[in-house]
Amino acid sequence: MTDEHPNIQRIRRVLDEQGGIYSWEDILAELEAGTLQSFTEGSSSVFTSIRQYPRKKVLDVRLAVGTLDEIYAIQPRVVAFAKEQGCDLLQAFGRHGWLGVKTPGWERVASVYIRRL
Image (tube, rainbow, N blue to C red):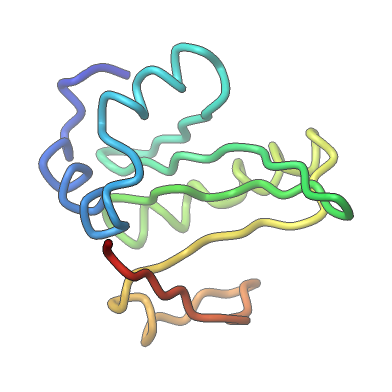
């Protein structure tokens, strides 16, 4: 994965919408360090990391960008990876545009709020 990703501008915009807690350069550094995983299909990508909470091991979907069909095609590989790593849950935070999207196998359990300081 390089700075030439086909959706680089979209990725940068989404990262900014998430509050700017990561930059594209941060994502690249974590991919290189092996603490972030990337799953691709066509021009779409899903970026994940593993988080160990006191009671659960979670595969955190940090970013998904591309077409819905391709992202759905990636999902079985993400689920398989999570199971191989002993994760108990998959977790994803979606933008407002995801509210009306049917996501088979997922349930909406909360909303995320941020306050910029």
